[in-house]
Structure formats: structure tokens, C-alpha cells
Image (cartoon, rainbow, N blue to C red):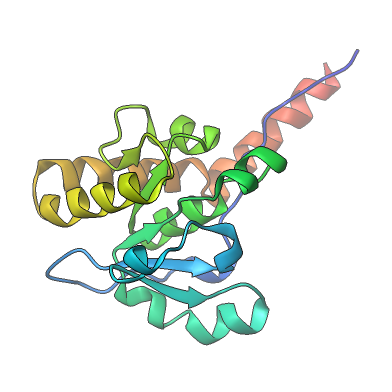
Length: 177
């Protein structure tokens, strides 16, 4: 009989044991290949873009990314529509202890964070992104900020090595039955 099971995407193993540094306000970063995010001159005034697009860029910026407590994960529409891509940016951010600014066009972002996550913007247009970034900055240290941190910690727990091992064990047991 055919069997289909869900195995969640793991975080990059180099991130475990690392945590963002203590900050006194919201600092936002996009860490990856800029072709995979919405970037405009206005957004660039608020978001720092670090190259993590390949192994060398990732290694070079790994320490620097710890100086940011918000990860920007808003994808361009053509990226969302044209391919299936796991929410790796969000998973990596959560493992570091950062919160996430994402948009509703990414189904697994909504699944992981919940439709009531306070920093989930409805669309990926520049105006919505800028409003979301403003909301994030204004919410620093308030109840919404800590609610978002709890959701992100929950996401990190769901993709922990122990949780993934449990998922694999479940899949193996199900295939034996």
C-alpha cells in the first residue's frame, strides 16, 4: 500500500548552539540569495542584506547574522508561484532565536507560524513590507514581540534533531505495518 508521510525540513546544522546576541531594538536582516526576496531601495533602508547564497557566503556571514533579531523572509511572487521551496529561512531564524517577518503567500510560513502570527503580512508588495517592518520595530519588547518569539521557538522545536528523529521513527514504523 502506498504511504505518504510528512518529514519537516531541518535547519542548517551549523546554526545549532548559536544564538542571536542581546539587542535593545529590532534589527532586521535578509540572509541568503537576494534573488529570493523582495528588495527595493526603501526596504533596503531598514533591512540589512547579507550574502548567504552559497557555502562561502554563509560561512563568511555566520557570525555577523547573530547581530540581528529579526529575519526578513518575504519572497517575490515569481519565486512563490514558480516553484516549491521550503521555509528554510524561517526555520534557520527560529533556531537562532530570531523572529520572522514573512508573507501569507508562503504556505508553510502560515502553517508553522499560524494565521494569527503578528508579523505575517498579507501581501509581498513594498507598502505591505514597509508597514510590516514598522509594526515590528514599534512592537519591540511588547506582548506581540514575545508572542512571536514563542511561535518561533515552537517552530524551532518542531524541526529539532530530536523531533525529526521522532518523525523518521514514526515513518519507519508505519511502513512496517
